[in-house]
Image (cartoon, rainbow, N blue to C red):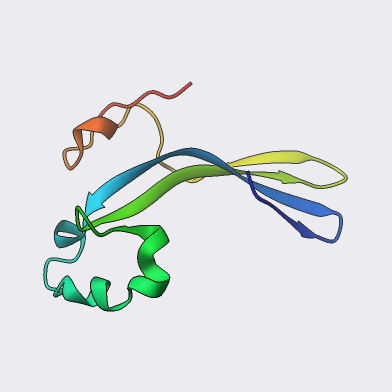
Length: 93
């Protein structure tokens, strides 16, 4: 968990998980060699062996002197997803 501070407000990223998504599906009209040409900066976000984008699902915990809030970034539970079986009707704890 990485925390950013903005005065007396903190924002912490809470990782739910990571997954790989085929770049050819996400960008069907893009030559995948473009990813390879930018290896020096894109490698933390791209699996070159599988030509997949590495994506993360996460939430944020925002703390102020008055309150604490959790921001859900909308992966959500119990949703029908036809693109990826792993996330179809997913339920996290």
